[in-house]
Image (cartoon, rainbow, N blue to C red; front, side, top):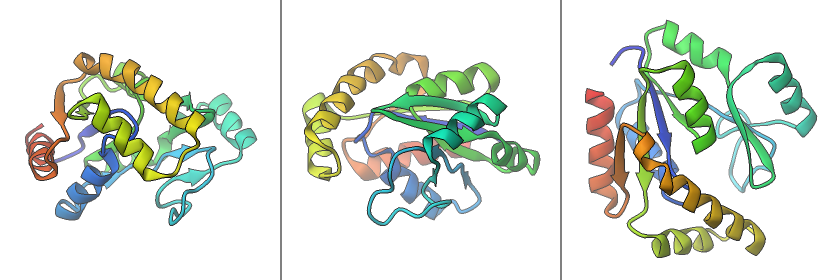
Length: 183
């Protein structure tokens, strides 16, 4: 695998992060792009490892400077991908994975038309809702926003090259690994 941009998208709570963590453990040659966000860190998250945690004014300066490959506002917070690390990894011939939201994936697709775009789906909406609620990280209002956004995102799945249903974790991981290895 050399210099391929891989975009991984799906609704909040679908298990993108868990799948990605397992994929990266099996394929350390892959580079995970670290996104920036204005949301507060969750327990155990480390700045520069899980996200770059920016104050809102800094994020807005990055937008104005064109320093983000993509960005979106979601659930009251900004999320985006700093462009410099992505370009440097691709220039080195490394494959890079972006785990991003739908709006960002659409922005990236306009710039990197040959990116491998993968959408992760829940087995059904009830399972997704249970996963989001069971995390215990969001307020009831944030959960409702995430669920409404999930409906919009799931409706856009056909915009992606491949869809993987995360029902059985090992099956979903094997499908993801095959796409990344062959894509």
